[in-house]
Structure formats: C-alpha cells, structure tokens
Length: 159
Image (cartoon, rainbow, N blue to C red; front, top):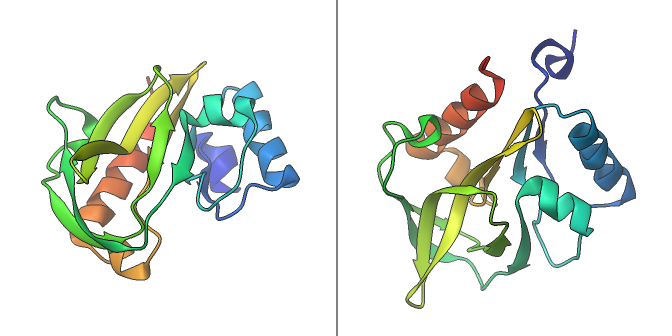
C-alpha cells in the first residue's frame, strides 16, 4: 500500500506547478488530508489563490544563490526540536505567507528576515513548507535532514 494511503500524508517537491499538480494539491486539501509542500513555489510562475492559501504562502522571487544562515525562531515546535541555526548555499526564496501559518525558521537578506519554514493546519490536515533545498548539498546537511524528518513526523503523527 502506498505511503499516502497508509499515513494520509503526501510529500511534494515541485519545481513547476502545472494544471495536474495544482488539481492534486486542491484535491488533497478538499479531502483534508495531511500534506507536506517542500517547495511548492519553486521558480518564477504564478499559482492560483486556492493553492497559495492551502500551501500557506506564495513565491515572490529569489536572487542568485548565495550562502545564508537559516535560524529557528523563538518558541517550541516539534518541527524545530533540536534544530540549531545552520548555513546553506542555496537559492534564497522570498515568499509571502498567509496569516494562518506558524513560522518556524527565518533567514536574513539585506537586513530583512524572510520565512524559510512554516506550518499550518488546513481543515483536519496539516501543511509544512520548507523553502531551502534547491541544491543537493542542502539535502546532505545533517540539520536539514533532521528538519525534514521532524516535519514528516509532525505531519503523520496522530492527534
């Protein structure tokens, strides 16, 4: 049985939101299933308001890749338990999030803090968005791997 059917969770690393992907995201939201959107707004395109609302935010832009520090914000949450600040060389996503999200990690560019990881409740389900992860080196970072593991565990835990 697929993981999605066993756990009610769906992980998505999406470089492009096409009609099929957008329909699937909306379908998951309609079923109020748990979903993790790792990077729903990767690149320069527009997505529908419904998908943006379900995901908790939308992509605005990104400068050329550079090295930056991802900082956990004050406050406890299972997603960032035991996660310290870490440096990555990656695309720095500038995103606008919905008021319904809880921001867990930020990074600073030109004196402005931007959300890098957030979560939210969506009906009976949960959504997590983690912005860094464009380059394989980010995925190999031990703290990034721990962050992803915590996010998946939070999504599938029983409430």
